Image 1 (cartoon, rainbow, N blue to C red):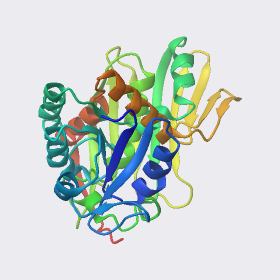
Image 2 (spheres, rainbow, N blue to C red):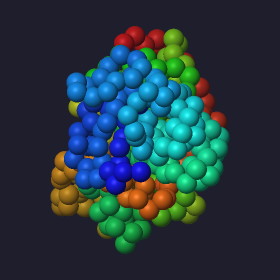
Image 3 (cartoon, rainbow, N blue to C red):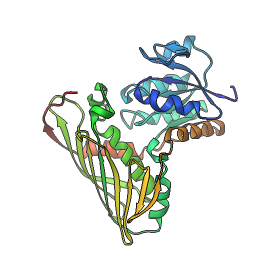
Image 4 (cartoon, rainbow, N blue to C red):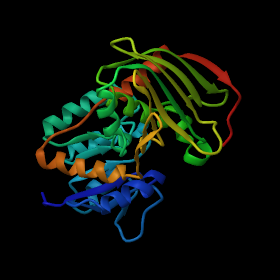
Length: 309
C-alpha cells in the first residue's frame, strides 16, 4: 500500500460534501481519490455509480468512507473489507447492532481498520467537560437536543424510513457525548417515542436514563424545533451547574465561560483514521448505538400528526 491513505467517499450527500470532503483535504497523510454516488460527484474526481464498480474499475484505494444511509452500510462495509480496504463508518455505524459484530470480525480477519465514528466526541469542549466533571459529584443531568429537520436534513426521506433512526440521527450525537463524559455505563430506563402517522421512525423522543450509580438523566430529542437548534447537556453538581452547549463547542462552569470554540470535528476524525490504519487497529464503540436500540426496545410508541417535508 501507499504511504498515503487513498480514500474513496461512498455516498456523496450533504454531510459528505460539507464535512468529509474538506476534512480529508486538511488531513496530512490522506487523499481523496474517488467518489461513489448514483448521481452526485465533486468536479475533478473519478466518479462511480456504486461500490462494486469502484472496486472493479476504479483507481487504487486503501480505504472507503461510508456516508450512505445506515440501512446500506453493512453490505458495503462487508464488500470493502473483503476487497482488503479499511472502512470508516459515518454515524450511526449501522442500522442494527447485530450487523456490526461480523464486520468487527471481518476487519480483524482481514487485518484492516474498522472505525465507527462519533464526530461530536471530537467537539472542542467535550474533553474539557469530561475532565471538569471527573472532579465533581453529579446529582442530575438533562439533555436537550432539538432542531428543525427541514433545515438540517432537507429532502432526506430515508431518515424517516425503518432503520433511518428519525430524531435519533442527531440524538445519537448527544448520546455519544454523554457516554464519553461519564465514567460509568449508561442505561435506558424508559422512553416515549413520537411517530408521525405517515412515517416509520420517530420525530421526537423522551428518555429516562441512569448510570450504574443511579444518576438520573433526562433526555429530550425533537425534530420539530424552529429557529436556532438546542444542543445542550446540563449537569447539576455540588459546585453548581456545568453546561455543555452548542453541540459540544461551548462549556460553562456556572457563569464562567470555560470553552467557546468552533473546533473542526471531522479533520480530527480523519487524523484518527490515519493513525488507526497505520497502527493496524480498529475503533468500534457501540455504546451510543446500544442506547438507541434500547430506546426502541423499551419505548412506548405514541402516534402524532403526519409530517410532510
